[in-house]
Length: 114
Length: 110
Image (cartoon, rainbow over all chains, first blue to last red; front, side, top):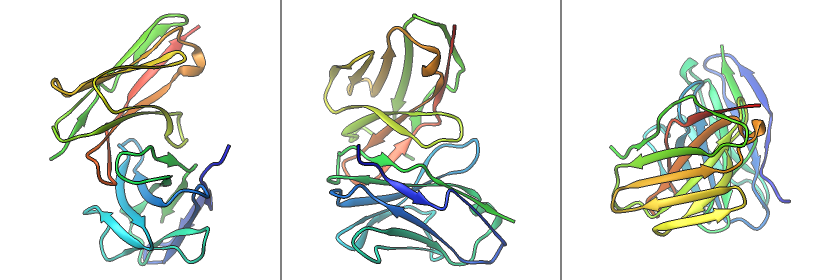
């Protein structure tokens, strides 16, 4: 069964460093998403991406964040200058169509900022 | 503020019993509703989606939606210890965003 994959599974970085989290969405899906979950808290929406542009973003997704689809399979989230409070699980998700459609999540990347 | 509310639990049920999980949402324009299961340290796994009022059954799972009351529930029949997890309710207004509740922890004892 097709699934979303993410790399790395765990990323440790120093405050102020740039990190890139990578995702390979399900191959026939057209809509891509990033969510994050701080330990013990709820899953929060960051950004959605369709047709090579951001379709929606949350207040969390400020100028330190960017997304890119560098090729036909990868979808990346970049954090330019990490802060301690960026430590969280970051989940990539994809859906076949947008709107009401079901979103399928990858296994996540645990980001630890020291 | 668009909120999705769930009782954090834990909800404890014996093996073989019915587990009933509830969720309320504040945004009346919400159009689609999802239940995800999340094991500790893992990602959300989609188990049910429901779009219209009434019941939707899939194996041991039944989702129920009442838009007038802004209420969605999940019933798990014949609960198994492997069902022990946190169940997340998520709501979509028709755009990209899923708004999640904090989840209800379910514990199924053998």
